[in-house]
Amino acid sequence: MFKLLIRKDPLISFVVVNYIVSWSFIYPSFQLILKAEDDKFPMLALIGIIGAYGPSISALIIEKITMGNQGVKALLNKLLIWKLHFKWYLFIFLVPVLLYGLAVLSTQLFGYELDTINFKEGLSSSFLFILIALPFGPLGEELGWRGFFLPKLLQKFNIWKSSLIVGVIWTVWHLATFSLPGAAIPSVFEVSFYTLFLYLLMTIAESFLFTYIFLKTNGSVLIAILLHTAFNAGSNIVLTIFPQVENNVDQRYVIYVINILLIAVLSIGLLLIERKNKDVK
Image (cartoon, rainbow, N blue to C red; front, top):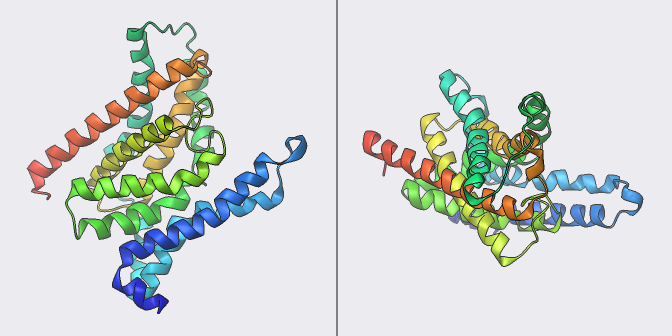
C-alpha cells in the first residue's frame, strides 16, 4: 500500500516523507540543545543530523521505490557532475557574498554608518565559514531539492511555477529550525509572522537562482551544494568585514530586505534571459 501511494504520486510522497523524517529528528534535537544545562552540548542532539539529511534520504527512498537501483544510481551520479566552465564556480562562490555585501553597503543610503571595515579578517575567515556551512544544510538537502524535487517538477511545470513550489516547500521544511535561534533566520531576529514572511521571500528568491544554476550546469547537485554553502556562509563573511552591523537589529532587517530584492532581481533577470535564448518553458 505504501509503495503504491509513492508510485502514484512521487512528488507529494517526497514532501510528506521528507517532512516526517526531518521534523522527527530536527525539532527534538534543537529542544535538547535549548534545554541543556551549563551550555553543555548534549550528545543525543546529534540525532538532528539525520533530520538535516531528510531531503536526501527521502529522495533516495522515493527514487528506489519508483525507479529502482538505476534511479538511485542516476540520482547519485548528479553529485559527480563537476566538469564545468570555471566561471560557474566563480559565480556560485562570489555572487552570494557580493549581493550581501552590496546590501550592507546600501544601508548607508538609509542613514546607517559603516565605520569599521575588516576586509582582511573577512577574507581570511572565508574558508572556515564555508567549511562550517557545508556539512549541514547544503550536503544534507540538495540531493533532495535540486537532485530530485526540482527536476520532477520541471517535467510537469514551467521554470517559474517549479521554482516557486520548491521555494514554498523548502520554507515550510525549515519551520522546525525556527525553534533554535540562528538556525534559519538571523539570531538577532525574533520569530514572528513578519520574519517568517521575509524568510519565505528569501527562500523563493534563492530558489529561482538555484533553478537558473541547475539549468546552466546540467543539473549538477554538486554545484547546488556549493551554491547553498556560499549563501549560508556569505552573510557571516560579510558581517566579519563589517562587524558593527552584527548586532544592529534595525540595520540587519534593512539588509535582509535589500538582499531579498537583489537576489530576486538577479534571479528573475537571468531566468528571463535563459528562457529567451533557450526557449525554456
